[in-house]
Length: 262
Image (cartoon, rainbow, N blue to C red; front, side):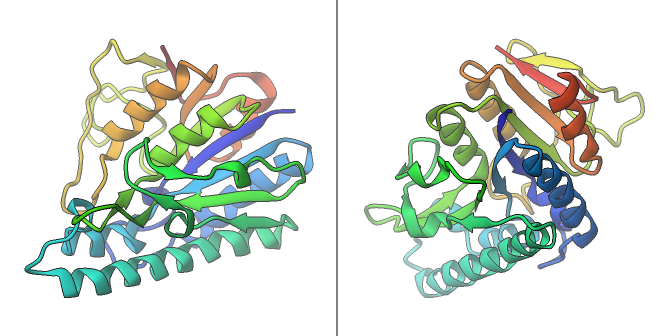
């Protein structure tokens, strides 16, 4: 059986352009596939993005860049609001797993992590489960030492640390919401084709919606995936709208998507 660290993108499970707009059908379909595989004996660690539950207010109040003395009162209120919104989004996933008789345990980064980037400080031991409980975490606003006070810890940074430090991880999967994997052009452009296998020696063509996304979008995702693939042999970017491809990958070793190689 495999141990899989999986990132459910915020753009997959929410409409990132509209405040707190979950895609409940997709949340349920992804949770159903992961639950079935878990029943079959595969172990999962689930990380999910913030989407419209975190990015919009974080962008409005510049939470990623830390405390601004001219806006600090509003920023501190926004920190509390975003953290509460993330718990609300997380509960939708927890409920979706519960419907499929899967027990989960949530680790909000604001409770246990400090600092941003993949060098954040925090105890990851809770993700190393011996039982069948599925641990879940997510991108969040976390505390930082010094005058900056707070910042955004991306779910992609969590993916790097967990994949590298939790023993026995066999697969790392990133689920996207608008494309079957990495593409030769932005997915909405004519002639865009799926890249089946990609390494960092090749340029990545993508777009970053800076008015919605406060982390690094597809560029941080690929950077994280490349770092992971030096440790974990199976690193993939898949279309989360078709979660059956997770099952196909685990059963056959291949599927439609992009495999990341060193």
